[in-house]
Each structure stands twice: as C-alpha cells, then as structure tokens.
Length: 247
Length: 247
DNA sequence: GACATTCAAATGTCTGACAATTAAGATACT
DNA sequence: AGTATCTTAATTGTCAGACATTTGAATGTC
Image (cartoon, rainbow over the protein chains, first blue to last red):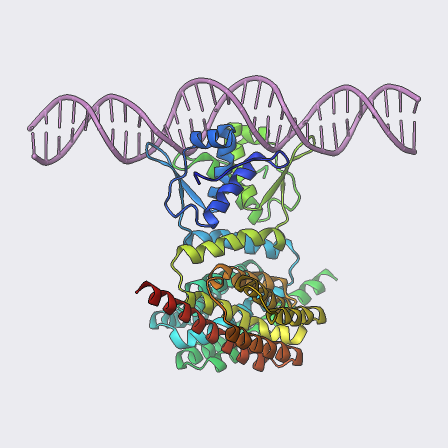
C-alpha cells in the first residue's frame, strides 16, 4: 500500500479509481485481513483528492464487504475478513435480481436449482449428520400438517433442501448451492399446492431422505430428478390456469 | 417509493438506513428497472438529511450494481437491470476472497468445484453446441503444446471447463458454476504440472469431451471424477514437496 | 431541415466546519 | 497500588454551501 503509485486519470470518476486501487491491493494480498487503511485525511493527501471523494471510494468498498469502518481514536477502515455469513445476503440479492430482471423462465431457474442440489447428493449421502437428517424429517412432517399455507409449505420445502445441502459438510458447496435454491423462493411462491400435490412431494422428500440416510446416492438422485420433473409440471399447471382465466 | 414512510432511527448510520430502504424497494418490485430515483436534492428533503448522506447511500447501491447514475439534465440515479455480465466480477471477487480468507483447504474447494461441474454434465451432454465442442477441442490441443507455462496451462484448463459448462445452455447454471470454477484459479495456479501430469490431464479432458460429444453423460461424469481425484493428488504432491523443502 | 448556441438540471468534487465515537492517557480517589 | 473517572486526541459521520462538469432540451440561425 505504501509503495504503490497512484496516478489517477481524468476519464473515469476519481472515487471509482481509488476504490479500484484499494480493491486490487486487497485482492492481490498487499493488504492483509484486519490491516488498517490510512485514515481518510491521509488518503486525501496520498491521492490528492478531497475527503468527500475518498469517502465515496471507501463507501463502495464497504458496500462490497471488503472493509469495515470504526469510529473514534485508533479507529479507521480495516480490511474485513469476508465470511460466508456476511457474503450471503449480497449473494442472495444479486441472484434474486438476476432471476427477476432477466426474464429467466421457471424451467431454466428450476433446472439450475436441481442441478446444484444433485451435485450435493453424493457427498451428503456420505456425510450427512444426524442433526441434519433430523431437520429433514421434521420438515417433511411439517409439510403434512393440515391448514399449512402455500407460503409456509414453500418455506419448509426450502428448509428441507437446505438441510440436505448442508449435509455435504462442505462450506463452499453449501454457500453456492444454498443461494441457488433460496434465490428461487419468489418463483416457487407463485405455485399453488393442492393436497394431492403436497402428498406427492412429501412422498418424494421421504424417498430422498431415506436414500440419503441409507447412503444410496443413486437412488436419491433418481428421486430428486422425479421431484424436479414434478415441480415443472406444477408450474405448467399454474401457467395454464392463468392463461385460461385470461381467456 | 412515493408512498413509503421513512423513519430513520439513530442507532445505525443514516446512509446505511437510506440505502437499505431503497434496496428493499428495488427487491420487492416497488421500483422497476430503468425507473429514475428522485434527484439527490429531492431525496435530501424526503429523508431530511444532507446531500452527502444521500450520496453515501447511493454510492453503496451503485457498488452493489443496483443503480447506475448519469450526469446532466434528465440524468439521475436509475434502477439498473442486473445483468449476468455486470454481476460476475463482484461474484468473482467475493468467491475468491471467501476461499483465501477462510482457510478453505484445497480439497474442500476442489470438491465444490467438481461437484458444480458434475451437475452440468447431463445437460451439456444433451445440448452442447458445435461451437462449444470446438472450444474444448482447441483448448485440449493447446494444453499439449511444448513450452507452455504452468500458468497458461492452468488458464487453458479453466477455459476448457468453462466451455463445458456453457454447453448446458442454461445462463443461471452457467453463472453459478462458472464462478465456482474460476474462483479457484489462484489455488490451481499453485500447482506445478510436469509433462507426465499434463499428459494424464489431457487424456482425461479428451475422454470427457468425447463422452459429451457422444451424449454419454455417465461416462463423462466418471472421467470427470477421475480428474477430480487426480487434481487432488497433484495438490498433495506440491504440499509434500514444500514440506520436504522446509525440512 | 440542419446545425450551432444557450440554458437548466443533475451529478461529481472541493472546502470547511461540527457532531459523535472511542481508546489511550491523565487524574483523582480509596 | 489499584481503581474509577475525567480529559484528550484521533477518527469517522454528517452538515452546509459552493463550484465544476456533463448532458439533453429548447432556442435561434442559416
């Protein structure tokens, strides 16, 4: 950081360039976790810009979870250790908006979602803990309760699948796949689940849980595949009903 | 936006609360794509804060790709359509930092990476285009060239696998899996590839490409699995060498 | 109709000030 | 000596006002 040379050009916004320079230093390891950046006034002198501009740059970095700021003496901006927990909300925001703003069809989103889940099954079949199995069973049970709203059913469905993914014991895979599933929540919420639909889904969930518990990855994948197909037919039904209502 | 009520509390930073309020409005659809936010001065009045504070909030949103700003008359802040291209760099930054800052082992990262790729294979075997097949073949060829640096070999390796993933024709899956693979680049770069190692990898790449072309998903998955195992043994070798050098 | 000029609105940057926060050091008390 | 409290300096957060820059629209000119 100290030795870097900063020559800001005129063709882009100054604050953007400063943020970029600091971001690069973080990415390539020049700045380590918990290291303190120079104070805002020092950065002003170093980049030869005003404090507003420096602050805009720091704000951008804070929004990307790259730094945290602390007021008071011995405070300042510190390189933040990006944790899975911190990164998750941003990830979710982006994923959800990508789906809703890019006219991604339900089929396409669904395909990606079940592909991600399928990737987890072999590992989950090997490593799933008793705790995670218990969560899956509990959610299956909840899904069979009378008077459960569609939205609650959907939430439970997602909890079930997230527990399955967590069963891999792999934080990276968990992070990626979990967001793939959860970002579909708004799309899934459009589906209406009749009692018959729920029965079918519960049966498939049970089959998947049984297979995972038995360590039978192949069976679990097969059942998951059926669930994927069934989910798409449900979505098709909703679409048809809406089309019929329109006419 | 107009009808929302904003009561800012004192316990958090004002700019953060404003950014949060606008972000919520975008997420729940109150603000549509390309819609223009009120001007900074109008936002000042509405939230009863100074322009600096409003600007800090807008900057945060811009850093998250949620809005874009445009200078000049009829300019302002507009809700941005989050495209896969725009979101990718942020995604990559986050993913890379998650790996490097959380002491994620090579095995763990590798496991997640190959799981994601495996999820793509059935779809790719069904839909991979001639163009994508050509890219895969070209990269395999490049990997066999004399005098190729380890880094270039690694880059080509990643290009190969990204083409495979693109073969799914699913933009969502492509986005997710692609970043899973690419974020491992820095870890992969630590490996040294002997001529013998490269030969093994090229053979596996060829087998995968052949299977994809033949539409044989099962075969492709089996070969990919071998590649995953082999990659981990290579990483183990590097670790052993380093340990030996230390002693 | 085509082109140049002017204008107004908006963001980007600068300056200077004050408020709020916080850890370290100084001080007073026991 | 130890502890509680006060002071202080450093730092970020917010405010206010100004000017610079950009840019589309309106206007004027040929």
